[in-house]
Length: 312
Image (cartoon, rainbow, N blue to C red; front, side):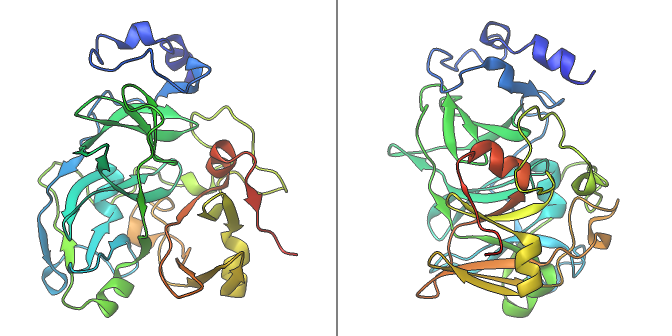
């Protein structure tokens, strides 16, 4: 029943009043029924711009096991973007070490990715469209109102269709881990919106039988659709395999897992979520690699021919 209103509006002609600047003649979408309304309208989930930061020691809100997205750029102080805020805003437009970045989190896919906002010589700023595709957030840039698929960082509708955002090597870890490594680092301060920050509005989601507003194929190999996988490029390692082994070196990368990070999509309060651990991914020289810890169904939807890194 939830799908019926969304499918009825799967037609660009119905969207042009809300999106007069979007060029719907340019698209990679074969079937417009793939685009569904997530519920909130355009900017109904308000992205954040130029956030305020405080020193790690001055924060009084975040609990030790809560997840944060860590952004470490050479020449800049390390910054933590707590999921207690990103769950409600999904995109933060910021500048770190001179690099304009978009720190993004799609709760329905557990996808946390940081992008460089520079495309074709211009700096874009991103908002939340209110649309979903394969249950993943569709972002839009305010300059051209091109639609962008968050999981892959690619323009899917509009003037910048086919353009790809550069992904930066950031990662999720617990607040306690970030603090221990960066006692003088920065953390995003609580935004000035009327939100119950620290509450998980998707209670029990990551143990549900099926993802929300998703009509695609389920993952192969008997992997649960909402099981977490570590995606590096077009490869995916099941988090269950990594957490059992602690460390895996394969395909030229090393993945390390450490207990102590709460799931942001489990219990009603984020800090009480079950332990899903933190992941770091590095190349052969020890440099951090861009990656994503996302749900298996989303990986299969966007990388249907991707390589599943299972036990030999």
